[in-house]
Amino acid sequence: MSIIADGYHGAMTNEKGLGAMMLSLTGGRVLLDDGTIQETSVQFEGGLIGGFETQNKRQKGTWDVRGHLVLPAIIDLHGDAFERQIMPRPGVSFPLDLALQDTDRQMASNGIATAYHGITYSWEPGLRGRDTVVQLLDALDRLRTRMLCDTRVHLRWETYNTTGASDIAEWMNTGRIDLLAFNDHMDLIRRALANPQKLGKYADRAGMTAEAFINLVDEVETRKNDIRAKADWLAMLAEKLDIPCASHDDESPAMRAHFKKLGARICEFPVNAETARYAIDHADPVIMGAPNVLRGGSHCDRLCATTAVSQGLCSVLTSDYYYPSLMQAPFKLASEGVTDFANGWNMVSKNPAEAAGLKDRGEIKKGKRADVVVVDDSIPGCPRIVATFVAGRPVHLIDAGYRMCA
Image 1: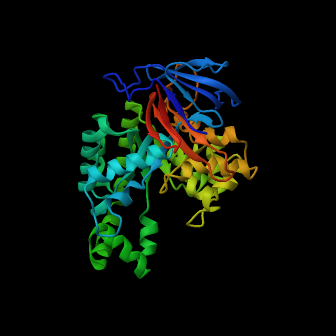
Image 2: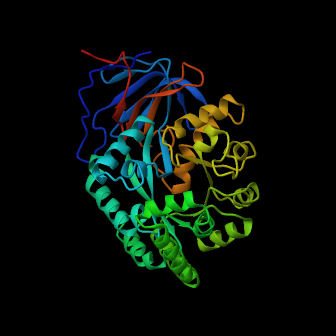
Image 3: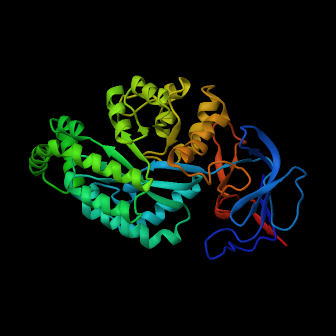
C-alpha cells in the first residue's frame, strides 16, 4: 500500500523545528495509549498529536496509510553503534560530523525519533578517551539543529576514570548530559589481558601497544579507593539537576541495591535474572538489548532478553550496538507469543520515555509530541519502516509507490 500525500509541500516547519502545518495520517491501524489498535486518523498540529477522526476523511494535508500500522516512534536510551561509523576498523577513523550524520540517517530510517548516544568516557585513550568525548560533544552541539532525530547524550562513565569526574560535573552543569550511567568494566578487561586476541582489540581501540595497555591497566587499578567519593559526588549532582542515572551490568541484587541507594534508578543490562528481579520488585526500570532478542540470547552468555521479557523482568529495550533491532524486536516477541504486541512496543516507546522522564512523548495521545512511525507489516517476520515523523515532520519516507497529489 502506498502512502499518498495530498497538498503536502515540503517540511514546512516553524522556527522551533515543529511541524507548522496540520497533517493527518488516515486509515492506518493505530496503537493508542490504552493499548488497543484501532483504525482511525491521527492529526498532527504544531508538532503535536492534535486529535483523531474515525471517519478517515481525505482532505488537504492527508496521508493515506491504509494497510499500515501507525505506532509511537522509538525512543532509544542506549545506542553506541555510532562508534562503528567513527572507527569501522581498529585504527581507521572518519570525521565525526560525517559519522554522526550518517548515524542520524540510520536511526531515522529505523523508526528512532529520540536517540541517546551511549558515549563512553573511559580511562582508556583513543575511541573512548577524553579527546574523543570532547570532540563528540562539540560535534553534537554543532550538528544538533541539523539532526533528523532528537539526539541526546547518555554518558557512560567508567568509574575508574576518577580524573574525569570534574569534566562530567561541568558537562552536567552546562546541560550537555541527559543520562548518566555508572560503568565498571575493569574486571572484564583485566580478564581479557590473558587472551592475546582480546588484548590486541583493546590496545588497538586505545591506540597503544599491548605492553603499554597492560601497564595502563595496572596504573588505573590503583585508583579504586577514589571511586566511591567521585560516584557519590556525581550522583548528588545528577539528582540536583534532575538527570536520570543508570547502573550498568549489575552482577547481583546487592550491587543493584548499592546503585539504587546511590540514585541510579535504572538497571541497565543486569547480568542475571536475580538482579533483574530485584530491580523490578523495587520499581526500577530494567533495560535489555534488542539485539539479544533478535539473536535469541546474549552474545556474552548473560541473561537472555527474551526470557527476561517472558518472566516480566524487562521494562525497556535499547538498540545497544545494532539500530535495526529496536523496530524488529517487538514483532519477534509477539510472533513467538512471548508478550502481546502492545506491551512489546511499549518497551521501545512508552516505557523508555517514562524511564528517562520524557513526559511529552512515547504514546499516540492528544497533546503529546507527534513522534510517529508508519510500519508495513504485510510480510510476516519482515516489517519495515515506511515513514518516520519527528515532532510532526516527515524525516524518513520510503515507498516505491509514493507520489504527491495535486
